[in-house]
Image (cartoon, rainbow, N blue to C red; front, side, top):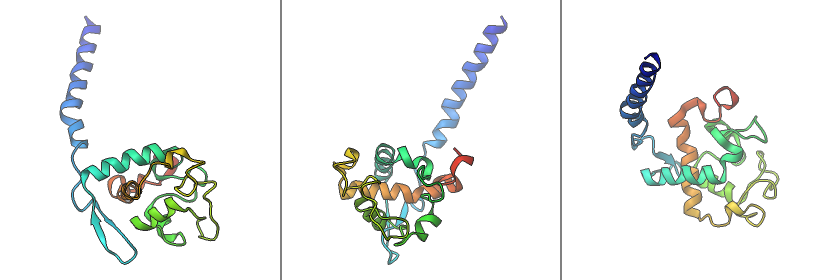
Length: 163
């Protein structure tokens, strides 16, 4: 009898979470959240919900192995949070500069090419996940990277204390 009551309680709890709690997380992001800086001149663009979903999928497929949660596994001092991106040389705090980085990556100070070490379009023969990505794909991935601090705040790029 006690086991049946426990199972019934878990079933009710499971249904409650699935019916009332999870749909809250599935809400669409508002326009303000989906607005990103397009270039260094300050021009902005609003990503569609479909672009955000596609950017997430592409990021998870191509980048998350090393950048899960916005961290950089090979160098934990540098992450994909807005401060780290803006302090890079050149600054990587807008969509086109991130696209440029994904095409031809350089060291954080901008002095050396790291295309043979970091997946990029330039080194697609070494990193096959990058072979079929178009500029539009790179732009949606950049958009996903730039909206994550608005969605998960300090967790994005926060490292081990959050993940």
